[in-house]
Amino acid sequence: MQLHPQHNRAGQPPFRGPNWQAEFNDKWITKGIDRSCIDYADRFGKYLKNNDLTTSQIRNVFGELKRIQMKGFQKEESAFLLLKPKMAYAVKRHGKMGLEALKQVFDKAYACVHSDKEFQNLVNFMEAILAFHKSYGGK
Image 1 (cartoon, rainbow, N blue to C red):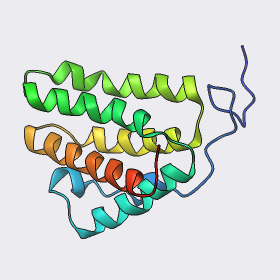
Image 2 (tube, helix red, strand yellow; image 1 turned 180 degrees about the vertical axis):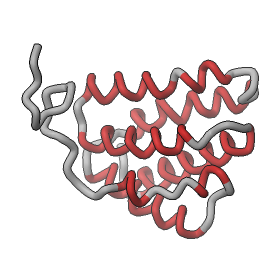
Image 3 (cartoon, one colour; image 1 turned 90 degrees about the vertical axis):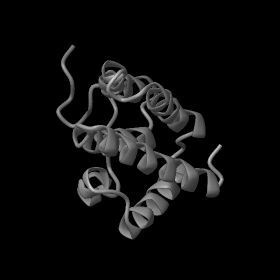
Image 4 (tube, rainbow, N blue to C red; image 1 turned 180 degrees about the horizontal axis):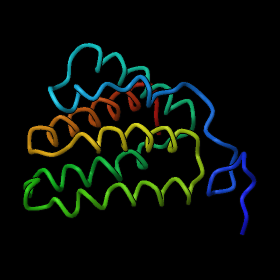
């Protein structure tokens, strides 16, 4: 099957909206969360809510991160590595702009994780996004 050059693998038009990926700062994962990260998570959580991303779609990723955290990042590193393809599958399956934005940001954060501390910072980052999404009425 040949895709139209202006469409993604799901046959949807390419992602249009704020460039959340470009605004993402790697230091939030490598060094730790700061005020600029909280501001970003606030704006991003609101954007996700306004683009029909459900709390359960965020929780699918966050819940797996928490499970990995409880068992230990080093012990569960393969489960962590599988999160990236799982996110790609979810985007293709649901085709929602909010989920595509979350995947793009998650992919950038995911690439920064190489240690327990960085993993913990990713968990905190995702928790902030989820909390703000919920505070704006995410269902």
